[in-house]
Length: 197
Image (tube, rainbow, N blue to C red; front, side):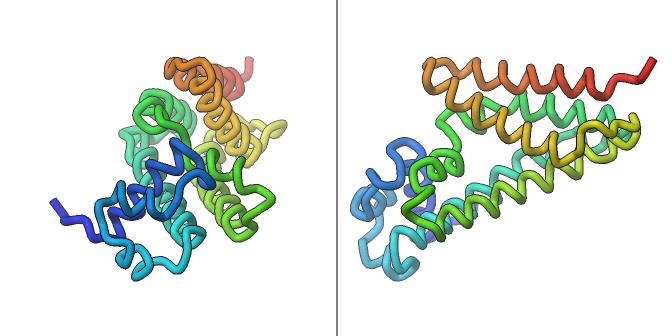
């Protein structure tokens, strides 16, 4: 197992604390205490909490996409079956991925107007997820000659469903809402991609 550097520990601590408490309520002292490193280690790697937040968000996006882009669905040759298996895979992994919330969504709500560099980067990271989802949905839509909905429409909708399901699960203290929301999206996509006639 690779040994974590002080920078890695700080990023992991920031992700955990900012997801649970929020960006503003998480201090540098909180982060270094949770990470178990000296405060100097923080400032050796980051100029500010804002710079750390961006690094934490980028790491979160990288690991998140790796988790959902490595399923067995990628071996499915039929594009429609691959798209449906992809959504099923995300549904099955939803509690594992988002039972504690989504760092991108949590921070974006909180910093929207106060930290333009952070919100700009969050937008770019969500765009990366959109492009990844589009790459799965586009061949399926083409295979069924679906023109009333674009791959980007589906990608944006899927992100909205995921983020909304996270909020609903947290507000009801019930992780089951994560799967329920994505399940309904899967039903919609199944109907959308059904063979005509």
